[in-house]
Length: 277
Picture 1 (cartoon, rainbow, N blue to C red):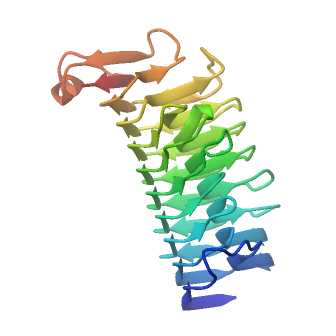
Picture 2 (picture 1 turned 90 degrees about the horizontal axis):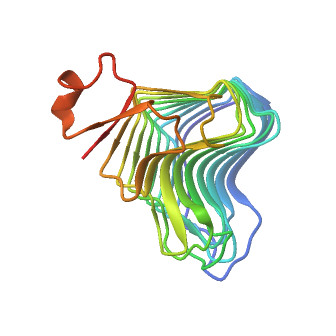
């Protein structure tokens, strides 16, 4: 299947409560989607869903400015056994829902997928509830997935009451052997009833987070459970953090630098993870 230059735009009404997505692929192999946009729709639950889709390429695909006023929303949702897919320069931005809002959602049994130069930005979960959570890149109980040069920025859950956490840039939740490399999590925001985190590794094992940066989040990086060594963090930078640069890390695994010049100056060489003002 090869699809080039398709737009799914301006469908539905603000009052709609639909259970459809802009594009739904199922039981497919070697799909090639290029220059596909799902923009400015109302009432849909998501942009692009994949069920049992493998060995496929998604390039220059955008899911932007969609609104679901009666539930959650996702940009890309990888469902049952969607494996070995590549997402290159795909953007999910300025979408909103009232419950869980995900830019890129990778679910259980979806393994060996790669996200390159992709971005989740300015997505918004609007409700005042514990289910109002926004996540840029959400890897949920999946294995051997990777993000390279990806960006999560300005994702917001201003009225969330979720506590830890209402807004997350990258979340590796019970994942195995997954990689974040040269990724950036900037300015996730949650209001008084919740906190934000740039990058979290929760449970799971064998994950590698390397050369990433988290800036202007409540928490820069978070490990659960506390002091876990199940995942590896190498040469990451936390900066301009509102609360805690590195939460629940093992003592000695991070260093504090006054400014960026410390990287090549007073810090231990080679340095592990650092916090900069």
